[in-house]
Amino acid sequence: MRLIPTRVHGILDYLVGALLVAAPWLFGFARGGAETWTPVVLGAGLIGYSLFTDYELGAIRKIPMNVHLWLDMAGGVLLAASPWLFGFADVIVWPHLAVGLIEIGTAAMTSTRPYESVDSARRTHAEQTYAAGRAVNPSGSVDPLASSGLDRTPPYQDRDRAGYDDRDDDRRRNVG
Image 1 (cartoon, rainbow, N blue to C red):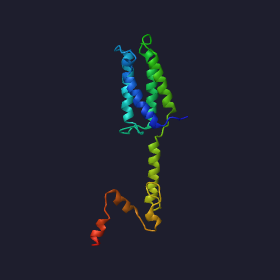
Image 2 (image 1 turned 180 degrees about the horizontal axis):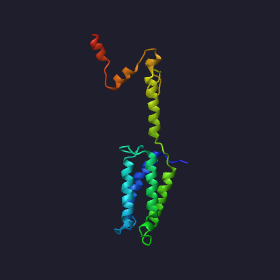
Image 3 (image 1 turned 90 degrees about the horizontal axis):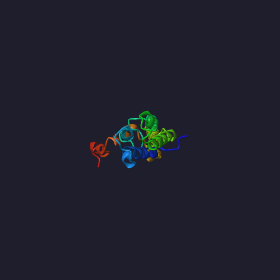
Image 4 (image 1 turned 30 degrees about the vertical axis):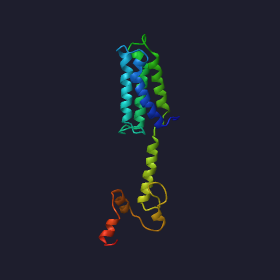
C-alpha cells in the first residue's frame, strides 16, 4: 500500500533530516552524549543520501528509490531503538522512538517509483517510436511532417539535437 508519492517523501526527507539535526537543542536534550549525536548523525545522513537519491528532489540521483527506502527503514529502526541500545532511556525516549517509528511507517508507505521516472520512460518510448519513423514526436503528439507525408528520418532528428541548422543545406546548394 504505497500511498505517499516520492515528491512528498523527498520534502519529508529534508524536513525530518533538519529536524533531527536540530532536535537535541529544540527539545532540550543536548547533553553531548549518544542521546544528542544519534539524531544529529542520522539526520545529516538522511539529508546526505536524499541528495543522491533518484527521485524528484535528488540532486545527483545515483541511489535507487528502493535502496533509499531501505536506508530510511534502517535509520528509523536504529533511531527508535537507540535509547535502549545506547543506554540513555532514563534521560530521553519519546522523540527518538516517535520519529523512528514515523520514519519506518513513511518508508513502508512511499512509492518506489518516482513520477519523473515514469514520465521519462514514456518520453523514451515516444522518442523510440519517433525514431522508428512513426508519426509521433518525442512530446507524444502527432508529428506534422510525418502527417503531411514528408519523411523525417532519424538523422534529421539527430541534427536538430546537435544544433544543426537547415540553412547549412541551403548554403551548400546555393539556395536562398
